[in-house]
Image (tube, rainbow, N blue to C red; front, top):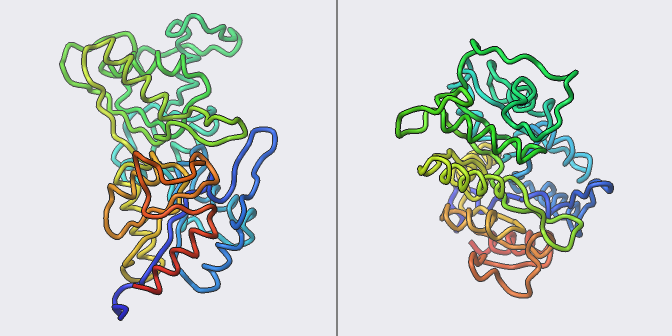
Length: 329
């Protein structure tokens, strides 16, 4: 018998590789069953959120894209991104001088402001002002800015998205993280004065190429290795996004707000065993991970390292399975 103080089931959808694929030069391509599965949940008034490690856009921007593609209205309150839990961190650094990092200078500035950071410098601006930090890059002298040696030290680095130039980013990250916030001035303490908040944890993603492409998590692995080689210390990182716990807690709270009560079982539908499934397994009850074969995962059986509770061919099959479980509970 269903408990009156809880809803039987809610859904959390990964986006890229579950609902659509985004390919350079092609754009967004809907995957089989995407529209139909969302229409079914809307019709039955089943609470659902979109839980994605997508980067480079705010929740409102991602909601607008989903609304257009899926043919249903998706409010920003239903979108939980890798960096969404950073909204609770941003106000603590609102007046601190921080480095904001995303693919472009425009997106770096936009996301920093969106997440409550007021006194930020973008990675791109920081690099232009100090071309000597990465001398092998042919900076346009007309675009160079004069760095101000009296400007405040960097207190934290917020990585919302992997930048375009990984080599430049690695050099500047290591320079700052081994210092007290001023590149080139290595601190004499054993700690790490500059905090690092990382909101793009995926190692790779499914695209048009036959082999998944590297992304922010791969850059972080490189940074860890280079930092340890340069300093002899382990890098301290504040992680955000799947598979780390904070984003699952944020998604569960969003579902409870939509339902107006607790959720007895959350069906996590994802295509990436190392992030979607691993994180849901680690989060434990009430999470129930379902793996689909439309993105990173293409295997005939379950993933051997991070086995889901169920494997489905596509998102519609995953939703049907979740609804059947909900009726059984």
